[in-house]
Image 1 (tube, rainbow, N blue to C red):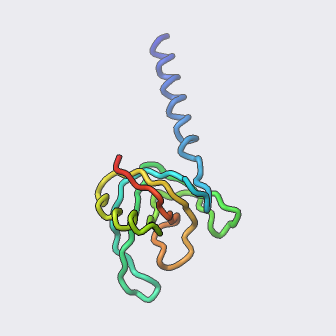
Image 2: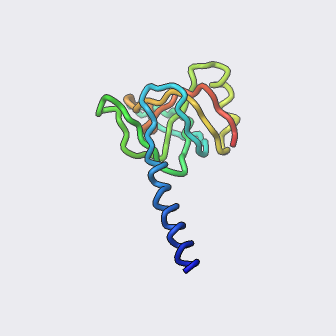
Image 3: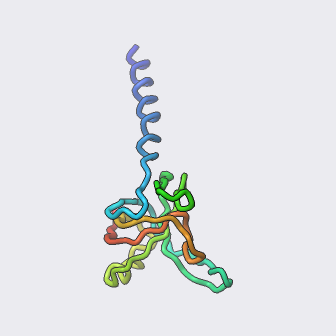
Length: 128
């Protein structure tokens, strides 16, 4: 009977995990948080010219709620990050290859320079 109770508790824990993962980020809302591994990817712009982008790869898919269906994201494990804050922008590269916690304002990709379905203007980045 005890084993049966443990198995039920384990099943409920596993079943509850996707619900937490399903919480979406909010489009153009500050203080949204993401955690994952940061990499520096090589991409091409619309004209075929090479460009680089910082990509956070999430361990669990996330989504982006938006009032605009064109910028909403159902599910992704990648976020393209950058920062309009010069000091933060200059510090991002030192986190490449590390697990990071980022806080910022996400929005849906909408140009050839956006290299993940969600793009985030980062206001904070820390190693975890």
